[in-house]
Image (cartoon, rainbow, N blue to C red):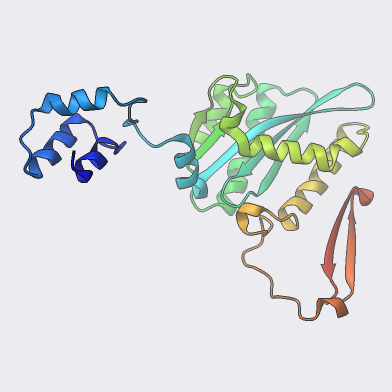
Amino acid sequence: MPPTTAELVHDRSLGDLLIHSDVVLDGLDAPQRAARTVLADIHPAPRRTGPTWRAFLSEQATSLIACDVLHIDTIGLQRLYALIFLEHHTRRLHMAGITAHPTVGWATQQARNLATDLGIRMDSPRFLIRDRDSKYTDAFDAVLQTEDIEIIKTPVRAPKANAHCERVIGTLRREVLDHLLIVDEAHARHVLATYQRHYNAHRPHRTRRQLPPQAQEQPLPVLKPASRRVLRTRVLGGVINAYRYAV
């Protein structure tokens, strides 16, 4: 089989009809069923229904947000629930709200707050990725759909389908929550709000070339760093330390 024809067979975007048409245009006299027979022997079958999940996330990153629920246990054995949102392109983190009783009305109000906030921060949010948690109701979805945001539900028991949110929750636990005893809801709200400011303004991200979410461009290189004084900012009493060169 000529190389060009072999490439056609393995092109995942083509079916047997298109492959047969291109083969005929190449000057080969072959029946259509021949292309179908060749494709049938290739496993797994090429995907022709659309882009892969990885490709979709990459192509739509600038208009994609995701959400997940983080639970926090206090020293009084009370469980709190925090709803977080993450912008895929910038990795900007939104702590939408925290409560001990995540009712339908509460979740819906957080969606309204997010829609208002994203209208300012993002040019064209189009998709929201979420899991199938019962906390997300039809009213929650409807608020975002009125803003022309399409809801994409991940498969059942497939946390990797919302990997960005899963990772940021893991980061939050490792960097903050595993080192603090949360007293109550007010304390948890303060901790999450403080971490959000640090995360968005100072924490570098590898996918953004070590830029924090709010940064727009790389800082100017520091000349003679050995002669510059390093300043430390304590976050949450020193649980996190942020460093910078003195001006």
